[in-house]
Image (cartoon, rainbow, N blue to C red; front, side):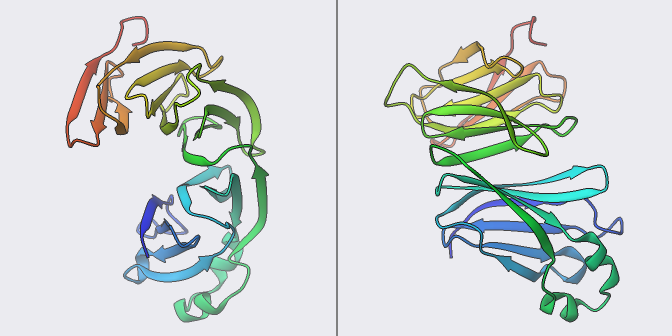
Length: 227
């Protein structure tokens, strides 16, 4: 089993209890519980191809797990927190059905390679084979899509800043582009000359940090009008 992605949940009923979700190439999502030495709680089978990205999303009193896949779907599964709080025995919880409920599937036109949720907002960005998309949670309403002029360019990773002001995307064209999160208009493009596999904005919002498939980390100074 090859693990492709990981995601930690917010705390679940106690400050020291979290869930760790893993997505793999064998189409499965496994949930591990930190309060039981990360033993597996349950396994989810909602996709027909590789699970490419996972995100937990907290909205008011509802906790959901979002997953995307090479099968061109985004799946939202709500955690049954009432059931989790009532079952004190871990082995009994493992045997329980309905730990996740109300699975909702959004069909996309292209494979979905990554997604990211702005922690302070209800917005999510996804990268697809040929486009970047912005969504509003919790109903996954599509706000905009950006498609590159280069038909051979594949979008690899996407990242949102915590306030959903900008979206960062890397592609097989060996470029990293920053978009206006509200409109989807490209604002800045940098060219590391290598495929970027991860990126983030610094905590002071003044630098862009990127990591490449060649094992190099770059720090870029952002234009003052973005910071």
